[in-house]
Image (cartoon, rainbow over all chains, first blue to last red; front, side, top):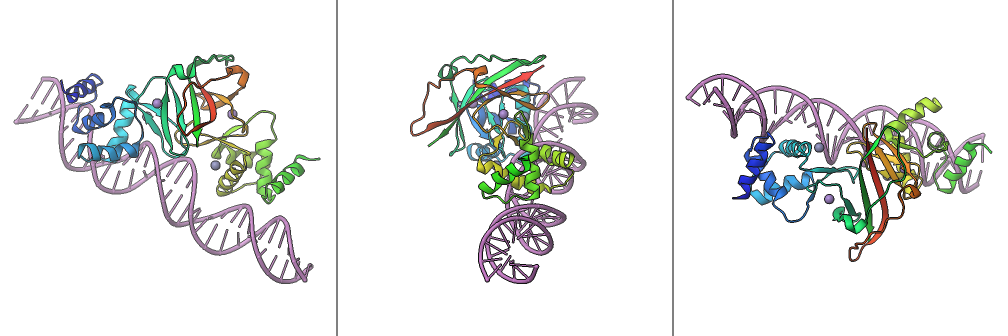
Amino acid sequence: MTSKQVFIEKLRNSSLRPTKQRINICEVLFNRDKTFHFTINDLFNLIKDKTGDKVSLATVYNTVHAFHKKGYLKEIPINSNQTYFDTNVTDHHHFFDVKEEKLIDLKNEDVGPIEIQKSIPGKKIKSVEVLVKLED
Amino acid sequence: MTSKQVFIEKLRNSSLRPTKQRINICEVLFNRDKTFHFTINDLFNLIKDKTGDKVSLATVYNTVHAFHKKGYLKEIPINSNQTYFDTNVTDHHHFFDVKEEKLIDLKNEDVGPIEIQKSIPGKKIKSVEVLVKLED
DNA sequence: AATCTTCTTTAGAATAATTATAAACAACGA
DNA sequence: TCGTTGTTTATAATTATTCTAAAGAAGATT
Ligand SMILES: [Mn+2]
Ligand SMILES: [Mn+2]
Ligand SMILES: [Zn+2]
Ligand SMILES: [Zn+2]
């Protein structure tokens, strides 16, 4: 079965119509071995480069947020101006190369378990994530 | 000695002229027991409220970035739209109350030491910070 | 104190990321 | 095929932030 068919299925199961644009975006985002960290603009340009088709910027925003809402993308505010997204939607840790402005996934075993010794009344922990900034 | 005098000294020592605006901003930012997390807009409104004087938005931006550059404020990108700043400039961990959009400092002993078991060639670790998201 | 220089403030314009609008279009079900 | 509903798109609007350039204030020099 071609990847395209898989994406069409997945979109249908998410009650998102499998349009040409969305399938192209899926190909760019999810046809990878490794996790992918990107900004909207990265993605916008990659779609043209990798598929030949141009998708409007508005559609890229719409689709990324639709996928985010469905839980297929994670939002990572690391940079003050542009938002980063991540195809790895699990709770996980990152290196952030400050000079290159690039995110790198850390495996949970690279960091080890973290025990939070404080609690706030009426609130519970939703996620615990470590950010390791790198310099030269 | 009044706090105002202290701020004037500090500004002079940082080769920043002690203007009325900057002193007001210092009073709002640094006359506190606890660490203060804020957005530019929070600060802009607090200045009016707490000092009676109006400082232009451009000056608030200028001053916050001047203080940031001098190391008196820390920048925390937690939210996709507005940047947060922190009067606690040490490396430290945070709770983030997602609903209230509020940051809360964690003490280092509330989290414990974190050992990073991975390294990237040519890069060294600049900081290690934990973000704990809270929900109801 | 008067003058000069340099830094700072400010209103308003400019920029850049993102979101809203609404008309054309495409997918779906009947 | 037709009607309905969801999607794409160009474009306008919005929002946070930065830039600009003129007026003002601080500090140094006489
Ligand atoms: Mn990641
Ligand atoms: Mn803090
Ligand atoms: Zn989103
Ligand atoms: Zn700054």
